[in-house]
Image 1 (cartoon, rainbow, N blue to C red):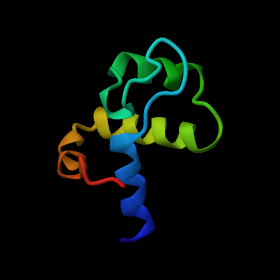
Image 2 (cartoon, rainbow, N blue to C red):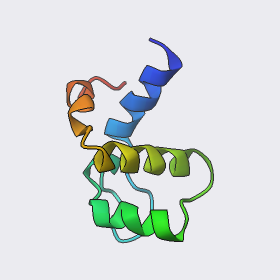
Image 3 (spheres, one colour):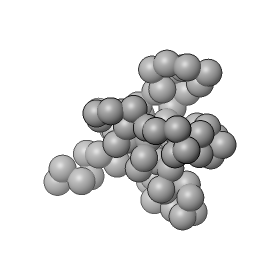
Length: 74
């Protein structure tokens, strides 16, 4: 598995660590919440990258790309 695949695998399993949606899988965050981050700034580091990626996936209607990965992350 290449590094890019591992990023996508993490996106389907990682939970939001804080805030209103604490404990929600990043892939299940509402677009409105991701839009808030887009306007106000994503967190620094890995979480920020993951949230930006989920935002772009949802914005472009690409959620179907994550479906085959659900349950495969280890």
